Amino acid sequence: MVYGIIVIGALLAAESARHETYPDTIASTLVAAALYWFAHSYANVLGARLERHERLSTGTLARELAHNWAIMRGATLPLLALVLTWIAGATLATAVTAALWSTIASLIAFELFAGVRSRASPRELALDVSVGAAMGVAILILKIILH
Image (cartoon, rainbow, N blue to C red; front, side, top):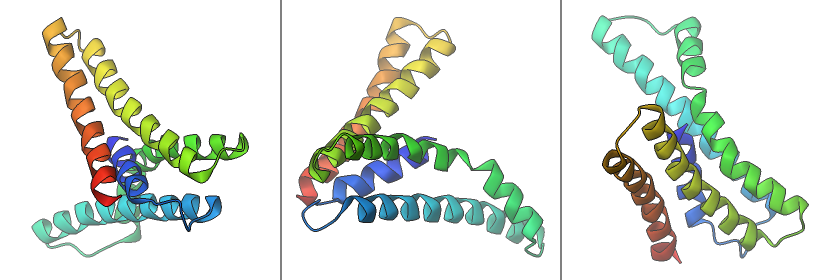
């Protein structure tokens, strides 16, 4: 899921919202997520094929796509923020900002959840949250650099 969240966050950080529309923005994020999901899955299959000298089969590719479906699930979090802000009548720029912040919050929340679930010490929890926050800050830096 983290890959899907980061891919969409990075794409939205590059989004200007000046010339785009909601449908264009949502479509581009869906296409980017799907492309990344397919590329990640295909790369895994290709690596295994090269290692084992196997031919490509639809079954192998389908299994890998199913295995990596979490990438698409992760992409739904920022996409949901986009759609909900559209429904609420917000500007596209506001929606992109909301989706970016939902991306950052999701990264931090997943790290926190993983730390709590693993019964991490307070110091380890701080590290977990710091890693999620660092990825979020990197997405914000990308937005600042591109705008």
